[in-house]
Length: 208
Image 1 (tube, rainbow, N blue to C red):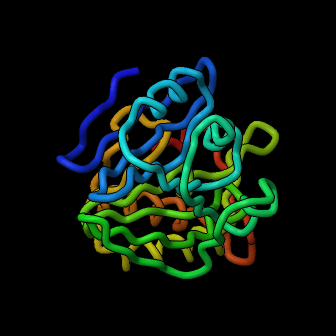
Image 2 (cartoon, rainbow, N blue to C red):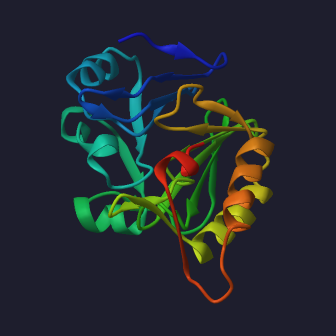
């Protein structure tokens, strides 16, 4: 699997549909190789095993296309959200923003996540932020459902994020301007009906 470069320190293995596997991000620190999501294909397993350096893994959320390869990847530490920790019975829970230095500045932060029950994002050098599926809705009965309180909270958190580029899994471009992602979330939130907790959209309308 070909590694795609974003910057000197940041790269990723692209998502696939057969099997369904999320984009897998890599951040090359001075001491560790930081991995954002581990995917769900043997191609990704082989590619990750070939990467040099002891690995620190961050899981955006618990869905199989982001986590299935975990048992096959040796790692030093695992970071995740509370619900992912409950599902996997392992990992350090990120309950508030946590920053560290490894030749790059890394900030792990919790997201309310419309798509799943809690997520974790990763900001790198205040330039790029891996978001996984956190800005997407959840599929329900052929529609895409948005918990509007979560949408509002996500907008507020991402507005405070210093990164100018957001990295969205399962998209062709992967790297999007922060302003574009926020504009899309605000447009979705603007479609709400007063008094309703959820918004349901057709899949085509909900696309980023």
